[in-house]
Length: 475
Ligand SMILES: Cc1cc2nc3c(=O)[nH]c(=O)nc-3n(C[C@H](O)[C@H](O)[C@H](O)COP(=O)(O)OP(=O)(O)OC[C@H]3O[C@@H](n4cnc5c(N)ncnc54)[C@H](O)[C@@H]3O)c2cc1C
Image (cartoon, rainbow, N blue to C red; front, side, top):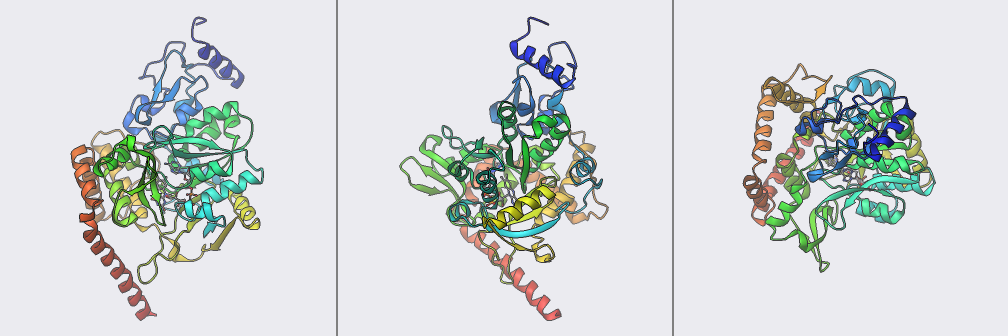
């Protein structure tokens, strides 16, 4: 084996230091059972970047459409990429025991919560540029400026290819401001772990649920590397979107990728609008109706990757703090908290961070722990709590590869939920056909669809008004 690549030799030294041995002396193949799921069941790959990040020899890198690729010559067969991979296996009870010291499988949507707040960053730039109240960036900046971390694992749009997202380590206010806002697209942020191996210091990470699952697995498999990340700020996630979305949205608005310098998923005033920043500085809206009711909700029905369709974790259950939009509406159906985020504090690490940010006046929050109106994610609760488990069970019965979970279909599933799952799966399947999704998305985001979406919003508001009137009558 002495004639193998220098990376392979480096890998052997790495394994010796860890008291590990290669799982085979042979050159690995894509079928090797100790590689991450992407290499033998691509459809289960979350494209989280963890296999790239954990690989001690650089044998795995992020390739086309953000799927990992492998150089077998460099692979030392350590098996770490499989062990940290969240694609094929997530055991909720194990993760709960590891993070909260108690073995349980949460039947709800929010998971383990110490306290819950609605709030915003006191820095106006961070708040205005945030997806919600800029809480994620506000907390990261607080950690950075107080010296609690040396850098933050975050995302931005790629400078050379501004239609694609990329992960990076922010070490300044300016870089954090560049990372603000949501990019509803696959970004393999855990690939940054590879950089952390060589880099001294402590880091914070703002990541999605699948990426948190992988990080918790990393804590078990390579505690030395995991210890570099001292806090996880988890984003809620209703599902990411295929990277093709940006190019296709530009296409339906008559733009080429080469026309733009930036792509904003939630640019402008809250709650934001998808926008292309053109080379001459002009900002072009990419849809004409309201963001949530007219854009994002449709995209999740057309562009959601297959692995996200089988994900059960919408609230980032194993983060130290989870942050979401605060979509609560008042009795007239209007949003109650514009430019706010909602925070679920889950661990003592999370509690300390929020307390320290409040004390430094970097964050303003209202405690909503005991206020039931902050159960803001009804649709998500249904989607993750019943529709996804139904889908996973159904696909398994049909012989399709699905992730192995210890969370099963709830007992009280209704026929309506089963029909809804079928319909949403059919829509997602239809979304795999480019002409269909371009036509559908093109129409829904066009000026022609505005009256339809306005009717939908009117009906929604009427429902809220009726519900409030009924409640008032009872009390
Ligand atoms: C793919 C995706 C799906 C989401 N789905 C929901 C949902 O269904 N319901 C809900 O309430 N909230 C959802 N969120 C979270 C929500 O959009 C906001 O990110 C959250 O409310 C925090 O807002 P903020 O103003 O506090 O964050 P900001 O201060 O704006 O910071 C946002 C942070 O998110 C990071 N980020 C952006 N895009 C990505 C990405 N693709 N991968 C990893 N990190 C990223 C940025 O690097 C930054 O650190 C989702 C976010 C993403 C990225």
